[in-house]
Image 1 (cartoon, rainbow, N blue to C red):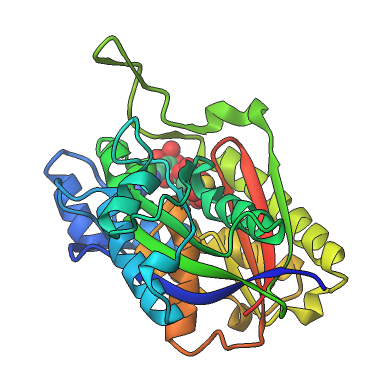
Image 2 (tube, helix red, strand yellow):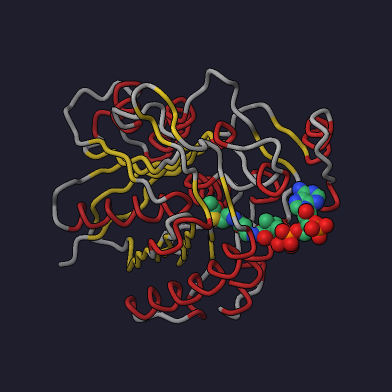
Length: 326
Ligand code: ACO
């Protein structure tokens, strides 16, 4: 009998400071940077985002999301035997945010804990790794988390990027099960596109060398994203022997409503079948998919037994998809 990894609980957390486009535009105006609610909504669909306080880290956000997910799963934190955190904004250079999170959750059972770095595809990567570890018997009950404080790496003098991103965290508890479960996953990367979306700085000799703020060629990212998401979706459905018609919910990375609309159109899915949170959260990178999944579950949209397709795309360039029965 196949051993599946099944999502048994979801959780999420947004830091309390919420900025509407008008709030952000007013702050940017003080720096002499001009933007508007109208421009941001028309080009991206974003209306608001949350920013963490300066002393709040990715593991702090992850902790709140994980507590919710563990409660929803009806298990104890001590039952977790694997922790994977997807983040591009870790608390420290090392150790991993996952190890810090393990301690904050009070898990002292020695379970493996590590970070995955695949930028906005991070959650899909992390979920796929956890699925493989559960299938092989290396883990029974995994905590898979996406957590980001992207506000730390934004250049608030660059209006083409700083209006797009936000902070937050989302988490799921995955458990070994005879019932499906994650049905199929696809992961990809093409490192020839490193330069179109990156934070090029690094720490050396006690100094930050290079620019530690986010750089993006928005149009190049847009074109690549639309192409690869469609292919990844079809390949994942093929692997599971399903078609677009079997999808109850599409939960894509929440970067831009226009990318999401284009993906849905190519899959012949109405936008009624797409969970959308980009309007309220902005792009929270690795946190965006688990935040949207938890929103879908808690709002009653995503129900037990339904078939859900997650799709991630981001810096690297990386992309992937995970298909599962809720
Ligand atoms: N406010 C007002 N005007 C702006 C702003 C802003 N915030 N930003 C750019 N503009 C101006 C530009 O200066 C330009 O003006 P010009 O014509 O006078 O030169 C004009 O708006 C158009 O700029 P474009 O860059 O051509 O705008 P575009 O329609 O391509 O939209 C955007 C830009 C929103 C970034 C789009 O390219 C996009 O969404 N790309 C995908 C980005 C993305 O999703 N990234 C994340 C995915 S991966 C990850 O999540 C890490």
